Image (cartoon, rainbow, N blue to C red):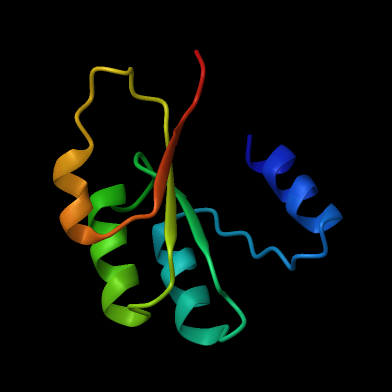
Length: 93
């Protein structure tokens, strides 16, 4: 999914930064002022997506976040709204 999303964004002229885990993603967010959108998974190595959302917002509060999740439709994501995310795309199984 990451490769397909990257290709689609690059074809539209966006510069895409890749991170293998949440620590790399947060380091990129600190160092790359060109980042204007964060797409992250709720389940990632090193830390949870929920924690990454909170840290993203403490580093760059105005940058929107799109979540990606492999969790089933029954997972209630409403409580995560307090950490402010824009949208959640659920991966198909």
